[in-house]
Length: 150
Image (cartoon, rainbow, N blue to C red; front, side, top):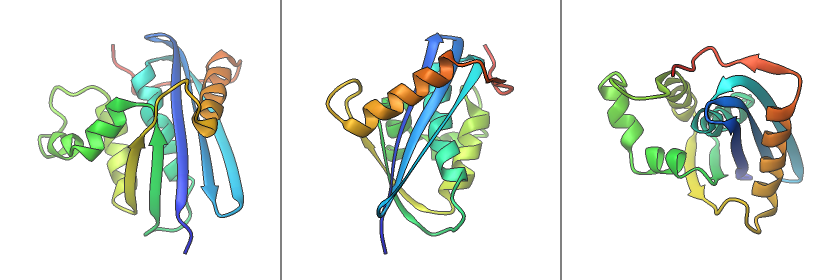
């Protein structure tokens, strides 16, 4: 069975400001790109939203997935197990609790590994996600980030 590979990136124009995410999903020879922009959000929220949006597209469960991202916030929170401790404590005092809860719901359905990649470097797919995210942030079809709390 093929491994699903996902690249993600988030962007914010100002922090907070208009933001967007981009993701590229690779399954065998199939490549799918997604992106969306939001009003009044943060870079970390968009980094995490890119992961969630990609995972929520999946129609079946139990997949082996590798997610490449330039967000140390996302990689460390998951790979070092921090988010699981936060969840046990009801995300008390943690930012982006709404998105982390959504991520954990997706995470339970798959075997996910995160890999950090250097942003704005020579990774073709990370760079493509950056373009998708920034174009979405600069676009006119911006959604409200209803979970953002200053």
